[in-house]
Amino acid sequence: MATRNLIRFYLNERLIELDDVAPDRTLLDFLRLDQVLRGTKEGCAEGDCGACTVLVGRLAGERLVYEGVNACIRFVGSLDGSHVVTVEHLKGRDGALHPVQQALVDYHGSQCGFCTPGFVMSLYGLWLANPNPSVPEIEMALQGNLCRCTGYAPIIRAAGAISNYGAAAEDALNEERETIIARLEALKDGARVDVTSEAGRFIVPADVDDLAAVVNEMPEARIVAGATDVGLWVTKFMREISPVVFIGHLMRDVDVGADEITFGAGVSYTEAFEVICEKLPQLRELFERIGGAQVRNMGTIGGNIANGSPIGDTPPPLIALGAEIVLRKGNARRVVALEDFFIDYGKQDRLPGEFVESVRVPLPKSDELFAAYKVTKRRDEDITAVLGAFRLTVLDDVVEKAVIAYGGMAGTPKRAKAVEQALVGKAWSLETVEAALAAFEMDYQPLTDWRASADYRMLAAKNLLKRFYFEMSGQTDTRIIRHEVA
Image 1 (cartoon, rainbow, N blue to C red):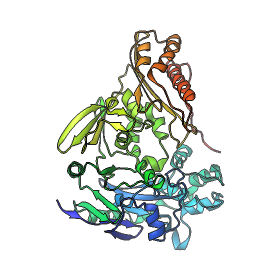
Image 2 (cartoon, rainbow, N blue to C red; image 1 turned 90 degrees about the horizontal axis):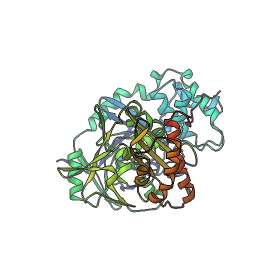
Image 3 (cartoon, rainbow, N blue to C red; image 1 turned 180 degrees about the vertical axis):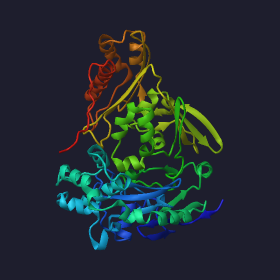
Image 4 (cartoon, one colour; image 1 turned 30 degrees about the vertical axis):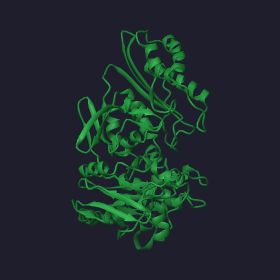
């Protein structure tokens, strides 16, 4: 296989070629320090505040898709074959402000201005994809952008007015679209990228078979997809991550069957969202609350599983659904039930040289009750304190089967088997649910940390089971609905 010892991508209108770049060099540092493009700001350095938002364009089949990402935790090595767009690239007609910028000026959407470039880029990405968004769509697009001065109402009003300032066809990225597609197509050479510098080595495999070969040869290599977790290892903990294998361009297929969905491990939350809404609408609210839009654009289904976090958002509902993962080592594959993949904190059933290739998710049957609930300190863009997922079969008002899984209650995502046993064979009633609550102590001994106390976690976990009962019984709806802003 051909090997190329440099990465190539477009930055605004320029081709960038780098043969000496560290595997942990962030896009934010590259922009501000190396390219002197300082409109992109550094705020939290962990992907929470959105001040560093830029757009990354990539080819998805015949389409060119631009997505907002957090430059502070996006590594330069992962950008091969893409188009990076910063706030400096926005252009209005005859030197005027871009419509996104002008709307923020006219609607008083900026005060100190530090966060404003990030808001501009998030709204730019939204406007490119949806020129006339609703207020809930605007709110979702801005979940990953924090402002401490202006308040969000004027920003939301500005977002709703952008299309009044000019036609989308006159926008630079829309005008350049065919040119950029041709440029990115020309960068495709089918080669493996292998770059070594004084700071370490990174590889960008040519395809999935090449990934299997690389990881089999280098089982110690760090596999990085969206970097929403590994990025913080670098920016917050100053950890060495070399050698790195960047795989964000791989395993992005979604196969929808009659009774099962198969997600490639590299499918992002954003890419999965449409299928989730159609086939698993019970998980729509959960997916809307995974990080902000930038995190959902970067983070992957497989990465959320492979990192083994006890507070990952997708494992509990996937365990409740009976999901399986396909692990690959070289050309060999094995299938593991997701609940068996998590052995202990920081330990998973994955052999050296093995990686998660895909995730198989059975769809709930028509006679099954299914829901998942996430408890956090703030509603949007927050880390889980407790997450409960429930799948029950009730026949003639009797619980025939129960699969319940929680995150945040143990060192791994874990089923509540004692609680399940306390429900099965009993009448589906509040009395049964109340009696089953005592079984939680047999399943879990939660920890106290800065997210929540052990007592709070235990009480919240019990209350989520009661919430599930009330909602499934049609007695109440506890969901928060987004409303229009006047």
